[in-house]
Image (cartoon, rainbow, N blue to C red):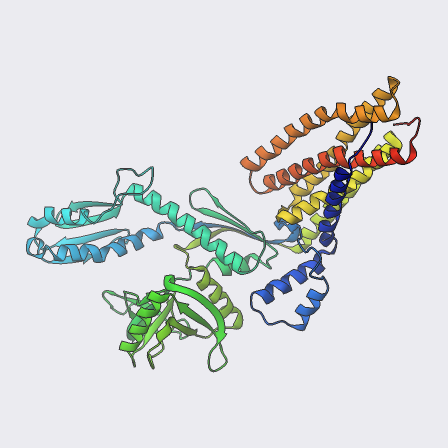
Length: 553
């Protein structure tokens, strides 16, 4: 008999209802988005404003508020392709090794004589020995400082190559360590860029490594590519140094020290101790704030070890200046008035509110390990995105109308059931996209349009089987039951193969291809559900009420 259990009826109705309810926010996209942004800002600590309260009141809390994220091609935004200067890190590694080499050679002073570092290429360390007879002992000591490279491709290799050239020891990074350093630099750069973009509250950015030293950054909804570059392009290396003296030129001799310009005082330079007191790596928080004169500033807080070092230094150097350095520029060089315990302080400078906010974001996210160079920079305007949305909507409506008219003309009342299931199907796709937080792009819209065309295939199979059963003289109930049962295997097989293709596209593809694969895969799942359960429920319910002796399919 043609029956549909009550539990299955309830379950199908609940799924359909959930699909409609969770699709609902997308019909009021701007209103829901403003309400979500206002709630997120207040949760992040912002003071509620009348505009925020009005935005939240426009979409009540008890209603679902998940939206389909619109991709860069629909929403507009910024596109950047940057190259990471991975070789910059080599010099830092060499510089970091020098103190250890110097201490090791000092212990051999009787054998090697005087020790003098020769400033040449920053990617190599050259030390001239006063007594060349002690060269072998010096090489052994320096080689003892090297470490094994901890990568699969660098098994057996050391991180530094050490050799002798005349009376000089030359230390360079080994090839295996260069490869490992490049990988670490790229991984760290990706993570820092992701943190900085996330700090702006932007949803669904695309941040991918491309090739050996390039990173693709696409952020929907941001005003311009330059705005994005201002956020991710700054190295944001923060350090605190002891001030040796002020200088009037960058060329002023300062052996063993740095000479950095002042950010706010043109023509003023500072000679600084090369060794930093504390660095930005020990920061745990940074927030935009205001100084005692009401000017924008940035307050910061160190971790316990950084706070202890900072507190001890300020206690021992009251009355002396120290410099706050950001990316080789002195932000300020205040005189220490008193000890600063607790590991917190404030950075003042000639900031605007926007600059202090951006600096706080950069400091919280951490410093890039190397500079980046912009290779490609584009701003995609919202007008283009709006045109794409309107074109996608027209494509969906045309496909929708064409399919519905065809089904109604071909299968009459049963075609009408299929059309209602098609509407439920689209609601379920949008509900799933909203719930899982997927990003909808133009290829994704193409996937939905394709799904609309394919969604009735299963219904066509079922209705054709019912026709065949009716031609053999079977009763209406028997023909409907046999039609669904015999079409099930064909429906399952055809959709499984298409679903597998969508999975492969998602696994092997990237960007737009993945967007297409996601909507295609979700569309297959929902269309099978609607064809097997939703249309069958409607057909069975209609049959139970009318009990027709004959039907036309």
